[in-house]
Length: 419
Length: 150
Image 1: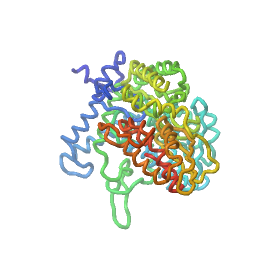
Image 2 (image 1 turned 90 degrees about the vertical axis):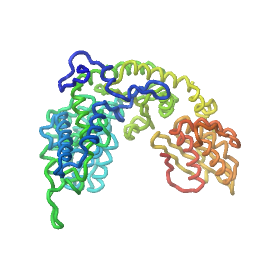
Image 3 (image 1 turned 30 degrees about the vertical axis):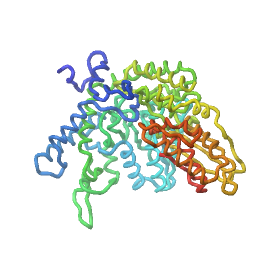
Image 4 (image 1 turned 60 degrees about the horizontal axis):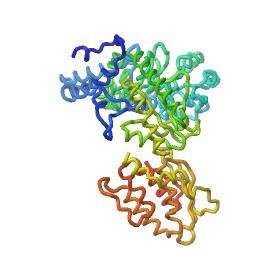
């Protein structure tokens, strides 16, 4: 038993044991439409290991109370567990201090917090906000709103046919009017890994701060925000084997001090009179209202668990699935893989001749295989390739080569139905 | 495979491959756009109304097999019908799609539209089959909004 439950923060010793990892996810043993579940929708959301589910249950069964304001024992326990979650997330990202971690509902809210703060205090008419053509709607729309409010301009770095953002195209669009650059670390629609460290160095050379949307990177590659040098890094718990409704914004202490509060309410203040309110210190200045306490606790446990498995090992395992999957799917007649970046996370977006992705999704579902079909909340990426939608298989740390083979067989079935 | 064949019946696959009335209509009196953002289905529906009758109807666009076949078969079904008849047909078709999955669908009076009876076993696909009809409804009301089925 101890061999199974012993998870440390060091990279796992010995070969990557995918079966042992699978056994930690209760949902992976269920069947769908009478077939074993093959879950290949990890870029959408990941499944949860038992330690995360147990931590949430334990909180509600043993420690539930409101945080930061009780004098009683339970409140103290709940506060400890929630702030412990924040410390774990800080460690996961390599942040200097937990006060640089703001809990949010997810990556989307984290980006909105920064965009709204910039619109309030830092953007003026004629300024520019730089994003890339790979972005998820959550790293487009908040900036469009900020630009609408201020008269700033949204500038987009175009992507290549491979689905890459060329460094020189990024550099070219950094101007004296650029006030912030917001770039995804890994593209959700295509899997492209952006050279964010280079982007950050180029932007900083011109005093432009950088926000990195790390929603798709955090579950797949080791992250160190200090080494990256980014000013902001946004992540979602549910894409990292943690609960939904919780995420985090990392911000350097300097930037978080400069940004205005995002929402007003309880917990984000230190004193309130009708004449004047003083805001709370970091990070609570940005956390109005009763927090998602169970979420923060579960998120911390998930981050620790993921570090225990070891991100380097996870990246290697998923890369093997990507290589295997790319090879097998490329061999299917009429199938085209969209997005062929040199640096790519384990995402395979594809289209099949004469079959709409939605029909692929339905037929795969009947085989027990869960994938996503549609525009993946990245309509500009779809438009770039002239596609209304793609089918997307995205792999997680518990997927196997056998599941890739099941995907291939099911796509053959799609071709059979559509003759 | 059996339930998949209930959904993807030969007639549906044929209409998907070679849709009827799949063309532009320069002299249309009504035009409506249908959009299913979740799937990326986009439909442009042209209707020519003469008096109280649908004299001609055609569509263009891209979408999944269910939405495309549904649009194709719908155009065949409502062409020549009165507005009231088309409305009644939509009511019947809607009942066919949304009835309880364990009850065998009664396709009486629906003609070729009855091939969509398998859709009720795939609730997420109902909106694919109804997109064309929602769009038709909007065209007949002559509202200019883009129809969304989400």
